[in-house]
Image 1 (cartoon, rainbow, N blue to C red):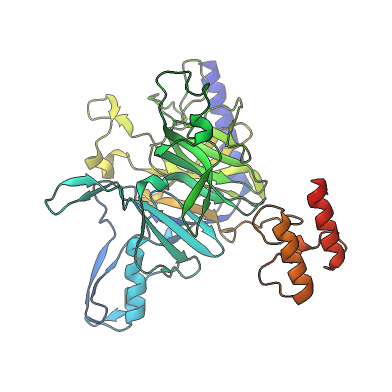
Image 2 (cartoon, rainbow, N blue to C red; image 1 turned 135 degrees about the horizontal axis):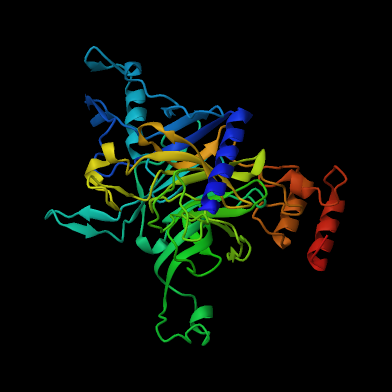
Length: 457
């Protein structure tokens, strides 16, 4: 009991410090519904547009912003805003282009991950079940993932309708993020029904356990090619926890949160403790992006439970030690009308708090979290970032002239082409200054060749 009282006091002091700081941050994000039985909340039917041959709706989906002034969190609001008066008045459409733009937000869903790179937002929607012509719900493996691309500034849909990918491309993830150290997009992807590579299948030690089979499964750190929507696994699917977030800080360190998996009843401070009085609940995990392996640590639990559904997290470049997490208020458990601690019914979400959401701050050093504030109207983002930091500043890799993340003979060719033509369209001039004298000349070609032969600068 003394441990819990001490932990409660520490948590209270920490939160008072947060309030006293008066820190103001604007968060931006991609809307994700958190209401299972009433997805029509906030939707407005406008009318049938004869020119576009479309039914026009205004829906919750879209780009949002949310203010935290150090004390309170504001109501999330759509930004850019969708105003019906801009395209519809007196019972008729006055601007078809804006009407089409508004209704396209119907498709801005990302229940399987989203990421921003080169000014383009890529969203992945997992279509796990569909109705066939007979009205039966069936699993659709050939068109499992709907991928859409958007202009992050305007919210314009850049893809002509949905682009579908099969289940075996394994695009479902706990999240994706750009690594500022190499500019690549990494994610914690859920690998399912995918055959293991020959290098593993031919390793007799891997199959020492007779129960092992040839199919990969679990979560794995991967990179993804956003043009082809193809993942490259750094490891097989090694991890089986229910991961709900993934984020990379300005130092290039990658973190994920588990959903918690605990049925503990929260203490008076709102946090969960185990039988020894130690914090439990969702756990912060760090991954090595080079090996794809999880880094062992002795971090505590965050102290908060969460549901297994997709959530979001991000870092501010000003403080890489603090992760901001937009997650659920509870794990779906609570006290029922009879005082029993049990699973809360979906249909009563408006009153029982099952889908309440909150903004948390997670200390990546200790793993502990603090609930900053609850979020009004149960909003949840599928992707979140700090205003103005939607894309990290990628460090120039010396010698990576063609910007593919590696230093090879192809970079020598690209550098020679630049020295002859001075056409910088396809190169990074910051990376091309190999001898670091402030100018790009034939001397840089010589320095780069020496680097490739020696294996180091």
